Length: 342
Image 1: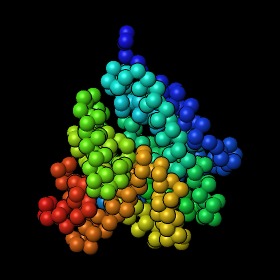
Image 2 (image 1 turned 90 degrees about the horizontal axis):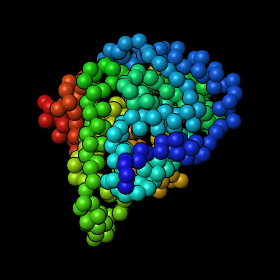
Image 3 (image 1 turned 45 degrees about the horizontal axis):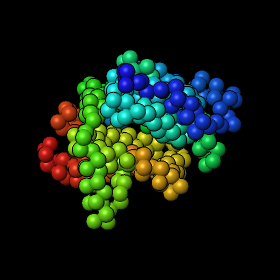
Image 4 (image 1 turned 90 degrees about the vertical axis):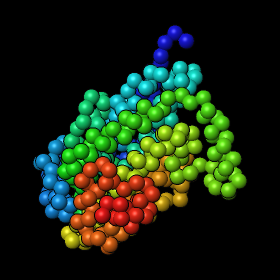
């Protein structure tokens, strides 16, 4: 081999675009109307989130409304930026054609996700050149759920805005959190060096699963099956943080929503049922997205258990420093976290 081969990210974009598909309202005035109102909507809920969380943030930054393909393209740009120079080593580390396989797999995953994502708070610019303060709403998916469930658009959009504004308050209201999170991702990428014992390790995991009658692929997907011990440790830290953030975000959006939105309870039930859609079960498990959706459930249980035991203000300890964050084991045993940080 004469040199390194970069991942063909444009190929990932084409695959994602085919799978993301379109929506009848994606090219209508509805998308323009949402674009015109989105920033004011986020700005209107921000004071409510600040009052609920105690996390003070600067005025709302960028608010973008995109279609499914645009969301997938932005996500691919983020992947490319995060992976950085590691992508140039794929052919050497994993064999010829690995970069093409990675592009196709990434495009397929993001193309399917593009049909489901409602909103997102972006930390990394699509080019990977730095950090940004951007809330993104995926207009066609918002429209689809409004119509399917006959939600009032003003209420449903406010509810989604509450969730994204809460994530923004977490990353901007906790000064060290953004760099900590990006550091975890960087460490995970750095831990992806070739491992000559990978095949033997996978065989051992498969054998253990068969002997103990466990699923061959766990909630963290195929990545978990092939991950090295160091990668598994990094993933556990990321999962613990995301459980806390998603659980906290869900509790805040529901709590504020119950006071200002008449249809909040029905919207919450719909979203929880959507995350456990049996039609998506196999895909979610193989890709590791099953754990992503469980983060909402585990995190919500953790937050509510801490509040019951020690009050809402006890969660402020988690924002004090990285060492005070719950581990993945403590997420499932909130009393252990309370004992450790007491």
